[in-house]
Amino acid sequence: MNDLTHRLDRIVTIQAAPETVFRFFEDSERWARWWGEGSTIDARPGGKVYIRHSNGVETVGEVLEVEPPRRLVFTYGYASGEPIPPGASRVTILLKPDAAGTRLHLVHEFADAAARDLHVQGWRFQLSIFGNVVADENFAGAEQVVDRWYAAWAIADEGARRAAFESIAGAAISFRDRYSLLDGIDDLLAHVAAGQRFMPGIGLQRAGAVRQCQGSALVDWVAKSADGAERMAGTSWFRFGPDGKVAAATSFGRWR
Image 1 (cartoon, rainbow, N blue to C red):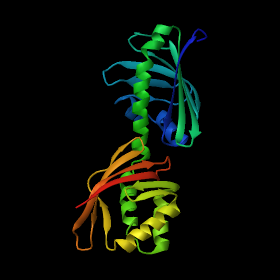
Image 2: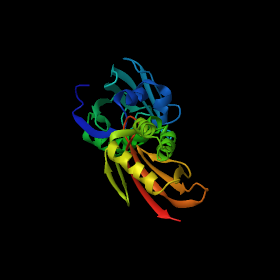
Image 3: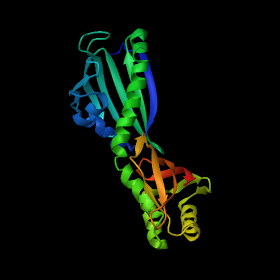
């Protein structure tokens, strides 16, 4: 493949650790979640790569190099022979740790510029899909984290409250609402304690499903007094770190 002189480069950030991202290159079930039902990969040198796109188009290839959790190289072509035949191009995927999770660098090498240009939008789309597929797995516990977040606001004991928040939120967490401009978990804990003092008996709970996309989530909530009456309602935006903890939250609310 020394004549592959035209290349397509794309770099994206995936909100998960490289080890988590690489699982999708080693397991056919995960691979199929990305590419489509029936797609398979045998992640060893000489192993077969098969992609069945949602429109029925089939792509085939052979694994050339595997270095978990940082590098995968395979050939790429179409079973039909068009627009490029099997073995006519090469895909290299490189993973590097990043503060937000993983920096994914994809290189697709071709023999001619026209074939390369045909794949630019395809990779833009497929790597966007991939980011969502990985996030769906990495943040599968988002609903439980959100429920524990709201429950922690009502914990009266200072030590237990700190332990609860530290188990679900990063140390540098930021929190914003109409009454808050907070950075760091100590600032957040002081704010929660003040809320309990000035609004005793108010409890928060999720109202409806968590809507998560690539590490960000929208959550509807209600605040109820001790007698069960709704006092406030609103929506919160959460951003999760690659470890699944809350890195930032902004809350929009209204009094009932």
